[in-house]
Amino acid sequence: MDDFTKAYIECALWSSTDDKGNNLDADHSVEDIAADTLTQMEADCKDFQQANTALIEEAKTIRTTYDDAHAGHDFWLTRNGHGAGFFDRGLAAAGDDLQLAAKVYGSQDLCIGDDGMIHSF
Image 1: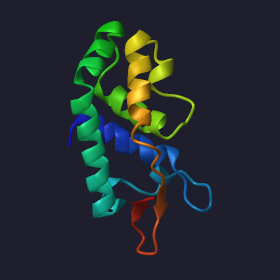
Image 2: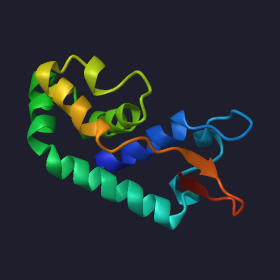
Image 3: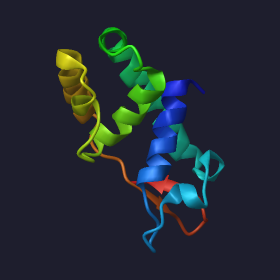
Image 4: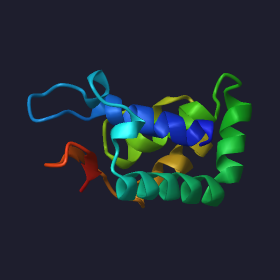
């Protein structure tokens, strides 16, 4: 799993909560994500990176501390409308374009199913 996808999943667990309001990353990890959900997350990350390679690379030149992990984190936040993400990283037009590109994927929410695994809906 590449750095973009790892950071995307880490951010997903950190920003999602269980039915008691606890962040999922407090008690869960990637191993707790249902196979179909993990497959979809990986596919979305791969697709986004392939479709936006030039913009991600441009962002890295605009802000030299920006890397693939930051981009994965921003992809999760942006697609889910968390009020943070590509647009607030100081990435100029590349950040604006990445913001628009991420929104195309729509939001993805996580929950713990009856099987104890994390699923998306």
